[in-house]
Picture 1 (tube, rainbow, N blue to C red):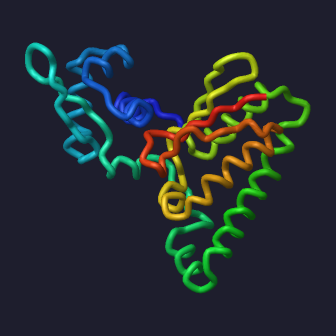
Picture 2 (cartoon, rainbow, N blue to C red):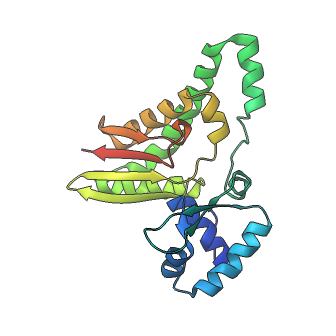
Amino acid sequence: MAARFSTKDRILELLKKETSLTVGELARLLGITEMAVRKHLNILERDSFLMITEMRQPMGRPIQVYSLSPKADDLFPKNYETMTLEFMRDLKDLHGDNVIEYLLEKRSERQKNEYLPKMQNKSLEEKVEQLKNIQVHKGYMAELKKLGNNQFELIEYNCPIFTVASEFKHACSCETNMFKQVLGTEKVKRVSCKTDNEDHCRFLVEA
């Protein structure tokens, strides 16, 4: 994802990652006043980029909680250069499911061949870090967390091919298998997926 610098863009990125936040939480994360946060939220709400719900408290008034609207999803990278949903539906109608699986696996093979040379002579930790960097460059808003010795969590906050993957789930299994191949370990498990109505795609990686 391209670098974001404005406060408004940082709010969008935080809401993409955390899924929902209050004014107070945004103010703390951004290091600015709640009044300044509200000013930006008002603009985003005016442009229909936000959804607002109320969270009841044991005492006092309910707190407003902000999350991104479906319209805001268009602000994040979508990569349909060679694989559009309409095109794939047409192919499925003409040739059946097998041709879709073939195309997705060919795409995964190309990715594997692109990624593998960047993994040479690296430890698993270095490979996962490199994979995270590649995915960031491709618009996945990826983040890496080290859980233990040779155990990592890779999170993708954005999916550039979400619309396609939602209809053709084989894209998700192709990605997981490609990760196994480029990282050199069978212990890559997708523990959550945006196409299953989860907040983000998360992978556990072990040696």
